[in-house]
Length: 227
Image 1 (cartoon, rainbow, N blue to C red):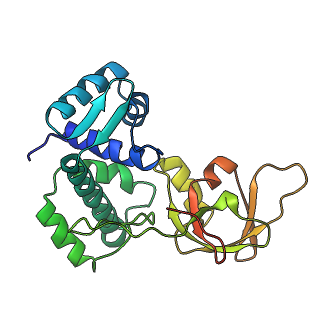
Image 2 (image 1 turned 120 degrees about the vertical axis):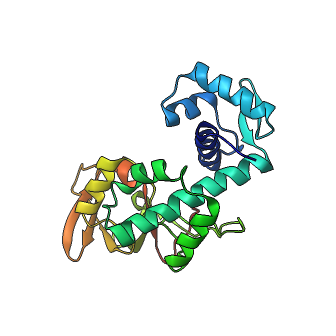
Image 3 (image 1 turned 120 degrees about the horizontal axis):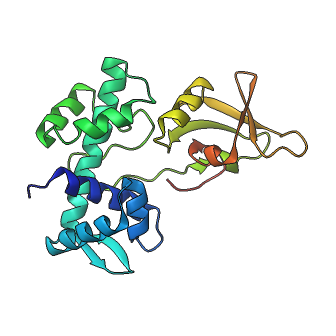
């Protein structure tokens, strides 16, 4: 099914929001906030997507993807993440800047070209932020036992696996602090009365506010969570 850029953006947003919701529904307000679009405009678009069989939508009940809508959303996520991998590895685009560039390019690349680009990159499993890249056959992504950096206890040692944040300023800050996928860190006890999360990287101390620490996902032996 041929879809517009707007359709693709909405379906991808609904997919990502549904992953965060216990009932797999994305609310109108959450979609509006994510896409920075007025709620009235979102409601109108959801009705069109529902009419075309890409979502199931009822007023006040949120939107759920149909199998057809999910297939388009996963394809867009795959395009986005493969493009990010290419931009970082082959063009040295800074990690903080790749999301905005990929948002533009994902609509211009065909799925066939993305498959060739993925093969060129060596069929990577994850994008530069550590997010899994869906396979060409859209097989279910294997979940990893990841927890947020903020959940670590003093003395815990962990490896950063994923940065679940798209804000360029926050990504730039994390990069400057050395908090990138693959980095091994050790959680340390905070000073009395401090609210930040304290950790060590190569024996150097770092402090991170709790909200941002929630978006840094790590693999810590003996502790399990869900991606």
